[in-house]
Image (tube, rainbow, N blue to C red):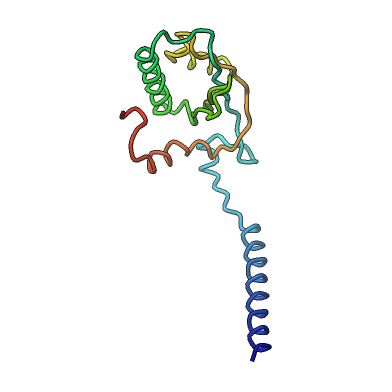
Length: 161
C-alpha cells in the first residue's frame, strides 16, 4: 500500500512540475504588446522612457520648532499631491533609515531643467530644509499608471491627519 501512495504522489509531483514548466513557457511566448498604450505612455520599443529622478537630501536649514516643522511638512506633502495630480510627479516617498538622503521623486519630464522648475515649488526646498539632487533615469513607461493604481488602493490621504 505504501508503494502505491509513493507512486501516486510521484506522478502528481511530476505532473505539477511539467504543468508549471509548460505554462511558464507559454506565458513567455505570449506577446501582449499594445501599441496605443505604448504611444500614450511615451514608451520606446523596450517599454521604457526617460524620467528625472530626484534624491531629496537634508538641507542646510533646520526647522526652528516642532509646530513650524509640522506645518512645513504638510505644505511639502500638499505640493507632492499637487504635482502628482498634474501628472508631473509619478512616484514620491521617504527613505526610512534617517540618513542624509531623505526620499525620492520620479518626475515625468525629459530634462533636469524641467525638474528643477518643479522642485522649486516645494516649500521645504524654498525653506532650505530639503535639497534636490536630480538625475536623468531610464525606466519602465508603466510607471505612468502608478498614481492611477495608487488612488484605487489608498484608503485615506497622507494629508488627512
